Length: 208
Image (cartoon, rainbow, N blue to C red; front, side, top):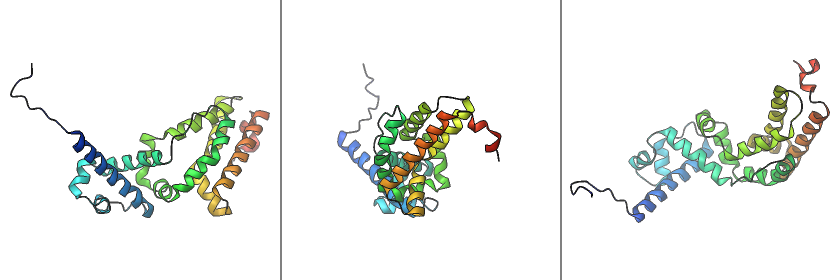
């Protein structure tokens, strides 16, 4: 039986919903602000953009790192769920949609990927998308020694990241769909070359 003097803390569903909505407003404001660069992002700016008091921001996010973590996670959610990718063909089939998502979030991606302050969030939290893509790529490179497989898979994986989409569009004027096709072609070429000669990465001719 509960002690009559024990205090019961009750949070109504309405209050919880309002709190969740406020938190979302704060994160949305941070997502909008990172377009201008994360390095100068302050809690005061976020509070102003969200239309809330500064103390409200700190109530939801006690530190700036907490806010950056939440913003990074929100970016991953906005980019949509990544399907299970078991093979290279499945990955290549998904690239047009993936690069289209990158294009839709390009301004936020620029703000986050080029910012040193997001490094810890990226390293600590990672992303479901990156894990699934790496797994699909790694499944293709099965010959050779462990180090060669890792080198080949990392080269192929690099062709799927957001910055590649941005570079291909800016440097060569490609559309998102063209950038996806270019990356898919390069990934297939790498896979074919590795399958033909898994030991090529150990060749003296490839050493700097």
